[in-house]
Length: 427
Ligand code: GP9
Ligand code: MN
Image (cartoon, rainbow, N blue to C red; front, top):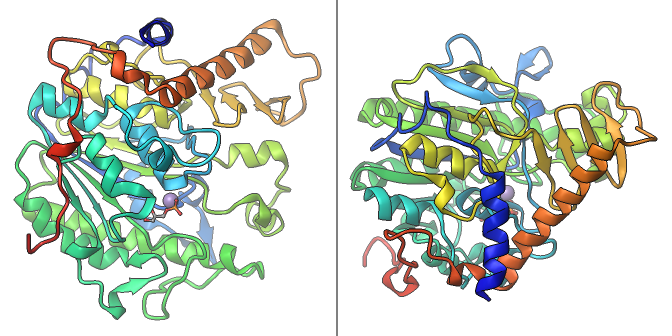
């Protein structure tokens, strides 16, 4: 009931991190384009296979010609069984996914204080998701209404003929190409979420689309992983080119993120060969890094930012960049650019990583040495409790549908799902 949400509110207010004054409001009124890199892990960045960069375009966003992107190299996914759907939920609500199943499916009718809804209510943003798969996958066509997403461009909007499709759905190159006219027609300012798909297990790719030879571990998924990553990288370069041609690039905030791991620990032998070291449980936790890039027009990029952060932190970060006070809303993450941002990244299973040590399967490790910490400090044990508590509070919000009881400010009106309808291009 409403007492339960007060407990949650007290916790998130206590955790809140003040905005960085150099960035607060710097992106106000700009379009926001968020690009989802399916199954993309950070080890791909600057990785060389057969003496070639696998993802030269993404790599260029890290280096000197970074076009004012800031790259977070200690950013982690926080997803569980909900995979892509968890990533979407976490980044658009700053709640955690559920310990089992996908909240998109089981809690899709909840009340959410979502990023697109807040942007619409506070600054008249419109919103859309673009994804070349059937609309009901992960219950998207229902939950998006509850998140206040105005338009959903799904498989019916794209040319799904045989040469355009592989594995789960539309190939990334035709996906971005065919999305451009829809994007150009959106009312501005907009929040557009572009969700790629080709770089998805088991990483199928046709001969014409493969521009790098597979790896040679003998594990097919691992070997092809580099080929679909290269294809995704090329599709992104094409999209940036088209954004520049259309004039949209100049004035848009662009965020790029990897949604979750692509190589599970069933592939540790092959991954050990790729990384040149044994994949221990600690190393596996470290490999849950996914890239996060952000560019704010008119703001100089920071190069590589080493802050430890995770998906829950993205929403408060963006709200502050837009000049919206994140403190009003229930959010478990904090602004990644804030001085007060805490270097603690909870995983959904209770493991967590900080800048100096990690907890993995109930064992503490020193990050520098990878060695077990046999006598954890009081502070470490306390941090473990706090992570546990935070996950529990987030679960209470979802299981109790507690945001029904929370009215953060005068502007907030709960999203009315029946106002949203996702048809097809003809009506
Ligand atoms: C399907 C796509 C894949 O539409 O989002 O989801 P995943 O298997 O990665 O959760
Ligand atoms: Mn995914």
